[in-house]
Length: 217
Image 1 (cartoon, helix red, strand yellow):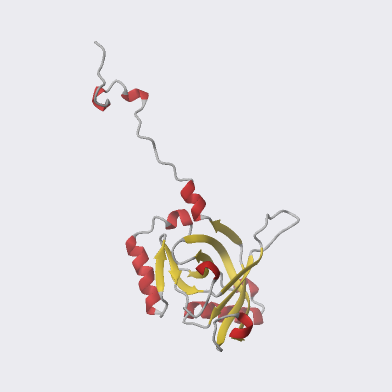
Image 2 (tube, rainbow, N blue to C red):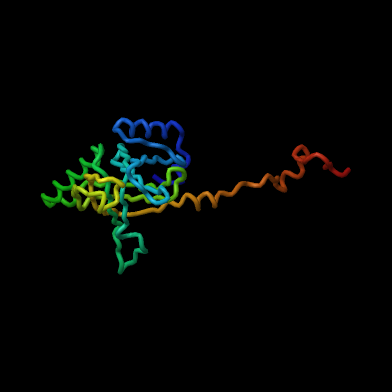
């Protein structure tokens, strides 16, 4: 989803996304017309900046909070001698994301049968927000899951909470065909308001003149 198009989303579209998220048990909010998943209060993020993943599987969109997002390759300049592949890792608590799990399972089956060309591809948008403002985003196109494991982490090792608890998490690596960045703060700076002026062709139309001006006989 292109950010410049996303900022023109209608209220109806935002409500529809929130309704879909609610149906799968995900708390959602909308910030600058972008869907943001609400993180559990047990998770502490510096300056409250946390990632949300928006997965696009054809006509189906699945949104979920992410606890760890790391870009591992492909964000640099691609040249003939340096063909970087956009790659990133995600870590999230095991949750109600049936379409994501379906793609992961299908990818595993294709890899086992050496049907690499048939691995399902999808798009992912990573939203970074502090709960009040939309700060940064990345749009990945043509992605596939290359590694996936389920792991159990203890809070005293990974800092998931301040109490003695464990977190069962999905850990996955994704490779994509392309990446676009979203910089909403800079986009706002580039918005230029048109000055309220009249063109030279309108000078003959005295009805457009302001009060105090008149034509010379």
